[in-house]
Length: 363
Image 1: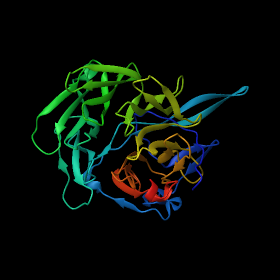
Image 2 (image 1 turned 90 degrees about the vertical axis):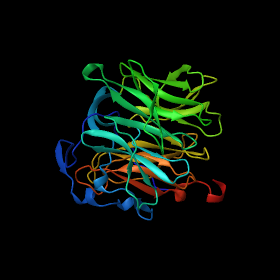
Image 3 (image 1 turned 60 degrees about the horizontal axis):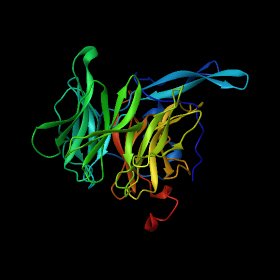
Image 4 (image 1 turned 30 degrees about the vertical axis):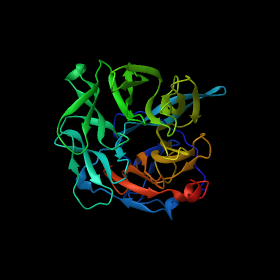
């Protein structure tokens, strides 16, 4: 398995970073445009990548920025660059694997578009709102839940809605409060919707029962991903490290209240965990350090379900993020700016069977 470089970075996002010049040890490093316009990196040799959208689709992806954090190292304080990014969901795959939904930007608005995984037909716009993001399919593939920012100025906030995937224009409001509500994730039986609520920079995990309307608060965290075959009681979430820009991955049990730190690194961040269909692996977005060959950027990482055996899946100097599993667990889909000097995103698919510890027949 390929070794994974240790890094120095971080998370949460707001402004776009333009890659090209970067300070390194007091000197400016100039990166060649060639490393951004190529579609794959040398370390990705032998991996099958397929581009599924075109630049005309205007795919929306995570904005990033670099922040500086002071870290105590013995008797000295070291100032370290951390990469921060928007951890929202920018891509979701239908449970049958026939379609994917991405966020498209057009006419100063962001909406959901559905396209076949086999290509061919044009993308179908499914929402017609202003600022949609953070979305997911129901387990039966009938519905899409999403977050949309409504209101004006300081009174604007994000609420969660649901729409039928194939027909009609009726939009059902699921959760609405003064705080931002994001990261919708359906329970396995479809009876509940998990989501995150943000207040003063702090995120907590909630659920709403579709039948009773009961809303329940559980614990700290965002980006929930339900673990298969646990009756939706176990899930992985992203959490912010106290007094730091960094984020890490935790596992929680909403019935017992057990909380376990799974994926963390004192010099970088991870977010947006997704559990494989067989429950054996986790993929997530993580930061990769700058070097003389490439700038600080985002890549896709894979871990065993217990948080061990870290494997870096992508190595391109552009942004790779928001990865999701195919239904058979043999491929992943993700958002990437690879091949673009202007940070234009596309949807990509890559095969990951070769990275599994066990054979395909035992997955």
